[in-house]
Length: 81
Image (cartoon, rainbow, N blue to C red):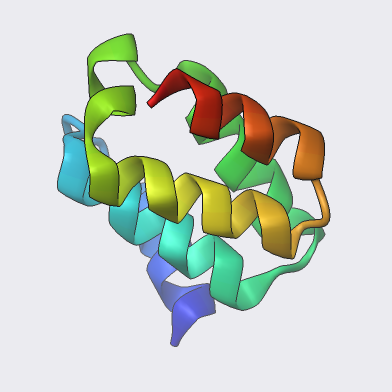
């Protein structure tokens, strides 16, 4: 089901908000494969600065990065909160 959610995310063209970022980060963390890592890290790199202050979004990104084993990036997101 998580794989289907990422398929849908890649197919539709929607304006992203904090809820969308949080959902996709959570899906990527659950899937935790190369595709999820590419999508999650790509989305994080493009995420506007104003969403980095949203606690749920940032903690979802941190959780995702930790599951990918990317402690350095997770710490960077943590420091930006």
